[in-house]
Image 1 (cartoon, helix red, strand yellow):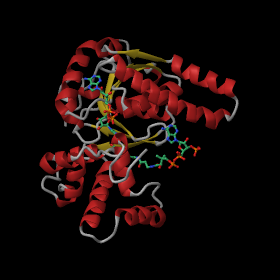
Image 2 (tube, rainbow, N blue to C red):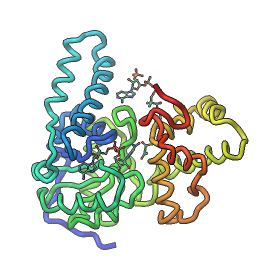
Image 3 (cartoon, rainbow, N blue to C red):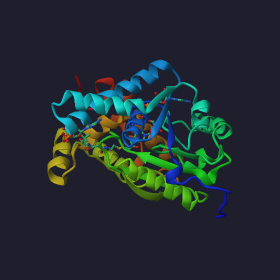
Length: 305
Ligand code: CAA
Ligand code: NAD
């Protein structure tokens, strides 16, 4: 593949200001860990009310972090939270936010057209050296990057849920991603206290490529009547040391998200088209159809308060 050489490159030392687009579950988490690590961060969403939701996710998570750091010292906890929050700015104007950023991380809805439209506009608005990254779980990075003229400065930056707690970040290179940009992203994620791993632009990257078929196999096992979902969950926690069983984890991630990922791969995932590993599961289909999406809707495989 041709490697495009740009005139100048951002380096990790140059990344001072980060914009995160999308203030949902993942976006808010990324904003939080970036601000906790000393970065100035713009948090962007479509409406003020969505930003307020993101802010709430951050403050409640920061309270947990502060408690761990400062115990019952309320003054020290408040100082810590206030300092982190002071590095976060809120905006509903993605172009304006990106225009003053060195790195833009996208964590919006998992829809290729929406992501492409966003990046097309950002490509015009952001400084020419700014790095673009997508937190997509299942879409090809190359397809998203195709909307821009900066493929050498484009990569996947895949965080895990819950972002403040999960140490891993997958960095996905497309053939054009420059070494400098890859190294910068690697340094930035380390500065955020995370551990980066590299992967090519293949469906599911590393973790979801293994985790999602495992979840689907757990569904098949229960659908065949081989074991109950409670026993599968207990089995994987106590027999394999997983922190959550597969049904608990699917409820945590969101059943609509699991269905969206597997449907996409089954139809067009490179090397996975028609593969029985990611074939639709009647049990999953039924719950999603009924609006039982896991923790976020109060009910999935299990019921939540
Ligand atoms: N913010 C800050 N801290 C948090 C937190 C949050 N949102 N969530 C948990 N924590 C902290 C708690 O404060 C606690 O800290 P201490 O142990 O130091 O006191 C610690 O994490 C453990 O939390 P809990 O005791 O509440 O609960 P737990 O022990 O059951 O752990 C968990 C919760 C970290 C979520 C754990 O169950 C786990 O690791 N589950 C698996 C999560 C997983 O696999 N995520 C990946 C999903 S797939 C994905 O994200 C990719 C995709 O594209 C779909
Ligand atoms: P979410 O629904 O919680 O949040 C998405 C946010 O993006 C919403 O607040 C929405 O208003 C906002 N948004 C949508 N279009 C926008 C636009 N054009 N401009 C600005 N904001 C916009 O979703 P999430 O779970 O945080 O997922 C976000 C991304 O991260 C997706 O690509 C998803 O695949 C990926 N991801 C999710 C998980 C997970 O476990 N939920 C894990 C890793 C990666």
